[in-house]
Length: 223
Image 1 (cartoon, rainbow, N blue to C red):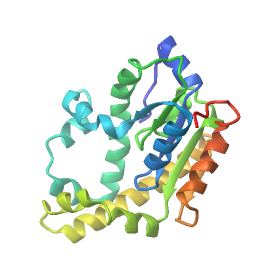
Image 2: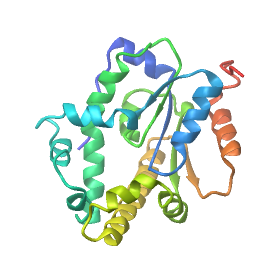
Image 3: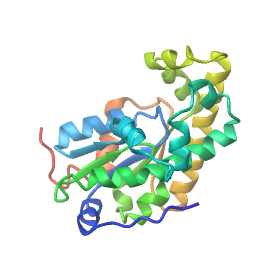
Image 4: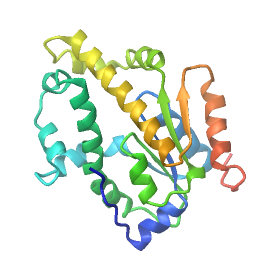
């Protein structure tokens, strides 16, 4: 089910000159976003930084979030993968209300870079974001598996599961299916996409995204 987005005048102004990096986890979008923010002096909103506050604020009015707030990691990752993917999209649609509340506290006059998997294509289309300032990044399966395994907090989560290997396999399958669907939706909405396979360095990728967004041409460079 699609979410209907209603924006205040200030939020419409913020989105009118916002930059958006969406996609699936482990695609490098957070690192690219951090570099662009530092280089071009952009106002920044990283969705992941607000996850705990959003979870603390959810109620039965956000049924998927509310259910996940009390689930154990084992309960989450041992669900059928298709159910996990459906829940992820529902979770992000429900969460968008909180994202808009956060953005309402930011300066609508400043160019802002929004980054996170929760910035679904259909939501961004309703917000009126310029497609030239949007990019959805999704990793290949091999890139995702390699880099996820290097994240130390992953092992802390898996240690809480009865079958860590199966939990990790389901987790990776969920993110891969989510990524494929995000690519499909982004392309259907007319938004650019990038499949990340590690063939380009981080410097090259960041410069490419900056060029796509027209950042240097817009005169925001602070370096």
